[in-house]
Length: 270
Length: 278
Image (cartoon, rainbow over all chains, first blue to last red; front, side, top):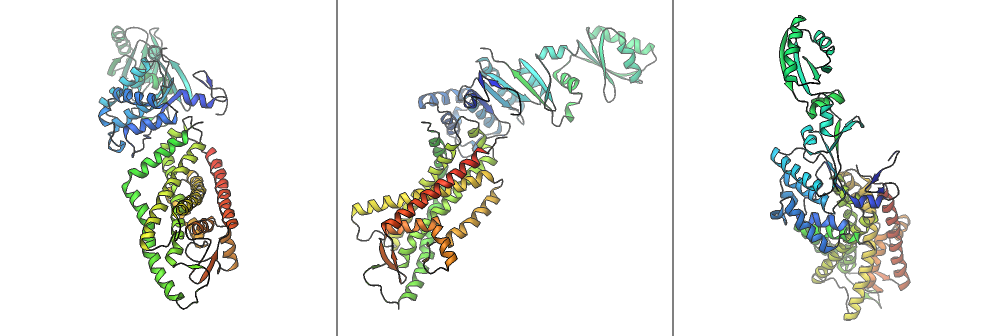
């Protein structure tokens, strides 16, 4: 830690690091399961590390295995589990000690859509039961679906934080995409309109963020451009998505994000 | 008291018992040393020393009995020196993150892994002794049952202290190194001087002065002396030489092993406080 203070679950990281460790759970980005231990042993080991009493450990193992639907794999070595099962086991492990705060680093990376959706369900369940979850992800739909609060991080700094709908609404009611014969001219024409919050250039066209219902504004805009001698080649109208929010704030297309990451902050309801 | 080290111990033993191949080879390999190297060398030495006069007044034991102690010591050395490798794998495969991000004090990792290496050494030593007795190693000859038990206890004390020392050393190396290949190389390099400057395979009395000095500070020499004292006796002769181990010498040897273990523990602890999880 370089500077500042960190308080997790009412414990100061600097003065009570042990207490902090006791109140958090972590699901790491890469798989960190011993291939040579069984599903039960993985959870057992974790419970022991946190000095959980035996009876409590056993009860918790049963409970978690049924939560992540791995009862049938109880005595199977983790090397024989599929990627999704391993992920589920890691999530169960993160929950073993009933942490007040759970950190999940890209928990659904590389998983098939069904497994992702199942994991989302667990995440929602856990959150509903009162655990605050910090989840990082590159998938904007995931962020949108799961979070109460989202922070977008670019180059290691939080550039915006808000509820998903707030972030999306900040971009306007609708987004109108236009490809024209003169994109620059079209931009300056549109920027003069009160109903347009802003215009952003794309590789082949422009995107106008509008304050009103786009379905009614679009014909008006098209007339205006035509009257200005600008030819329209393509049009698209859509609601702002988290992808648009990300692009808007980081100024980059998602596909060339390299080191950027999105962090979602999810306050638990206690 | 925090019993975290038992958790580390439990996991390591679990893996030891689980890998049948590893378990089997770790038990058979020392036995093979005794069976091949021991028997072959024994025959040679018996032939070379056949013409030498018998030293009067002390019990003469064969070479196989002489290196029986050496093979136990050597096995303990190898098992303990490689015992820390698991930490390197844990570190490289990210498994250690779980342990390091838990409230478990790091020192428990060292202690737990040390105890498991000690247990493995006990098991191996027992197997070698049983196998050795079958091959004709003359351990505990003329001892009463009580004396055998007391001797076994003494041997295990020596093995315990020794294996802890080398395990701590191994753990310190493992946590510092980046690659298993590098660790393998360093440890192989380390075993050579320890092994060959000791009295495990041949008497150290006839070494040139430098080697002899090395031999007296070599923990392996102290372990071998301890085992011979308890398993063979305080006075005996082998390959034409007379060996005497006084009680004082044996106590000094044990203290030397304890001191070695203590120093290695401090080094391991120091290396562990430097580990960061990323």
